Image (cartoon, rainbow, N blue to C red):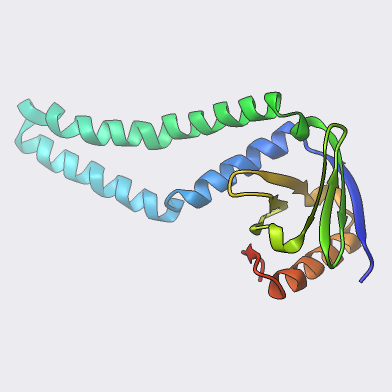
Length: 173
């Protein structure tokens, strides 16, 4: 296998979209949330028609829950993503990726990472985003839209092979 090399710079809109995709993946899935919301509102309406004077007692827990799920949680993800993007120099740099059978190398303007595959805990694919996790909380983003089509196919097949032969967790099939 020959080395795969490509260079790219992470864009803010791509980073934000990927952060939200990860948030939604970690949260309960949307098809599961919508029926729960409808059931909770149906219960609230049923209770409030019989106990109108006390309906605020029933609405408050549901209202706070939905406010947190629908407003506060996405807002906190946006705020944290913006803070990370502005403060982390590695997210704003042009990165050169080199992928071989034995190691992953990422070279930025202010850092260089060269590690064997056994030190990479996981590789995740989210639509057109590829994430190389250097630890449980640190990931390097690759925008697959910026990679040539033939290189993208070869890159994904190579990574699948590497993941099969090592202990890297992945969602690539």
